[in-house]
Image (tube, rainbow, N blue to C red; front, side):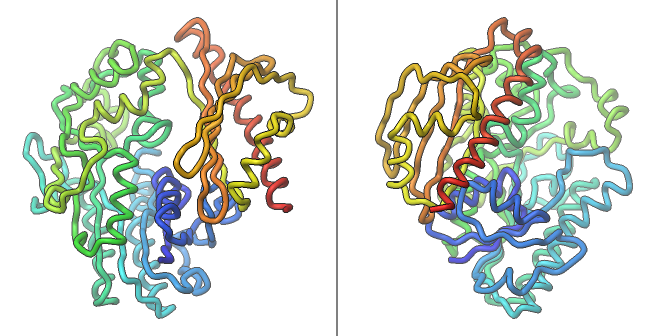
Length: 434
């Protein structure tokens, strides 16, 4: 199936693109910067320019599209909610949905299924009330924003009566280095993370792997339709979440942030941190959806376990239009591996291990690179979409604990970023030239 995905460069979009490709779908993306989008995506991608708000989608972008996944929307938590900012947040969701639907109609493209992201913010601040898909929409800016967003996407059933619509009300998305954990983990690791307000507010989550699998099911299974709460079976109060996060990270929770301080500092945006939404996945239970991660604690142990071992982690992934056999053959020679590092960098491979995986291989290199801690580089090669996905995960330890991370952490990450930026260009040149 040819699937159009807006918001393709985001945390969800990038993970979803890989999952859709693995499932045999062809992905078309829309982005403000299509050239950059196409080069950084870890899966084969046809990407077209679209800013969502000021123009319609080109007919060429929609050619042959059978399904749409609409993820586009500016970050809710990025800036303080001024009147101008709130207008931008509304436009990035509501107007982009309007423009997308008008584009489909103008191009005479009738999708079989339209899946739209939404949010549990629709329920507003509801205390200890258990919320299901049958619960009423709440009050406040987030609830109003989500209500308008969903109302606009519901127009797809008026324009295309045979199209199945799914609206996923997502909780906070958990995954390594991005989303909710990407924002709070650095704060907790510095010893500055604590409960918010009285900590009694309920928070609803979903792991990124469960979410992308859910999106895929929504495309393929006609039983999935209407509003669906995309959340774990067990929501959690903020104070307990704080305790679990501190425990997994091996730190102490800091002094709580009083509600009054958050309201003074963040204004209306403080409702993001203080609102209570005890959301339950009633529809997913009826559909017998199998969660890989049912609780917040399971998810953070999976994603953050490396920190409990005193290690740091860096990731960089790349897709190339070269056969799995071709890429594997290249990396069999250690000299080729070293040629991908910047010239003049003193590097030694201390050891190497290879493990066969289903559909790929995993190679572990222990590296000594001048000026960096000893690195374990896990390079996974997977056949994907007629090419090869190269997944790079580096693990290393910074001496002197929290102080060492504070002094050297950023400089090590920056240097690794430069190394893998160089490596990416070399790999692109090497395999695209063939």
